[in-house]
Image (cartoon, rainbow, N blue to C red; front, top):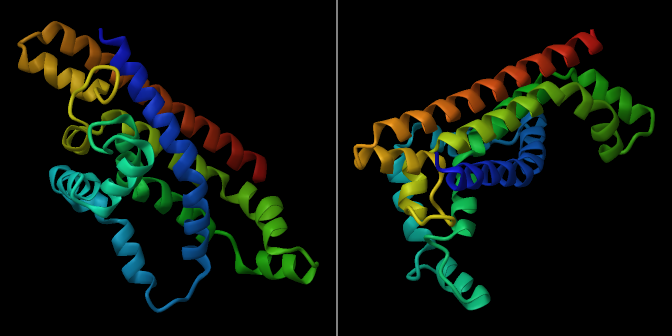
Length: 222
């Protein structure tokens, strides 16, 4: 069992959730209430990681993060090293790949909130921020929790983008999914099977807890 790869995957998933979910709350809430003419195009763009092959998305990210791009050059000038084949590059790629898994359930949760509640909050003198914090977020919490779980679980199992952007550097970019692939390539099916079983168990427990917490929250509001 490659515990180092497992810990790296858990750390990557946790950081992806911490960074992406607050952004997804802002974006999802805006998409839920806006009537902008370009809304459909924005939603389609955010959903692209769902339909693009991981190798295609990984290739574009590899090019975007490479030393030949302005992003790669800027990163190297500021931090003194390239963005590709580093944990930082892997984290940014993970955030981009997981955008639809975080934004879509949160957007649906905000869409389920009656517009009358927002109008009533405004009539009571509540600011946009206080209305969001005291009324909308508690009601949208099941969707937010779903986005958190999907982001974390998808990060644990992501393979194509991780391999393209991060490679397989032990302790730096070698996630549990990459470690399983390496073990299979080395014909070590026993180790691959153990790691696959652990990953399956973690994903199952995480999703089950998400369902249980979501049901509890809904019962409380009912």
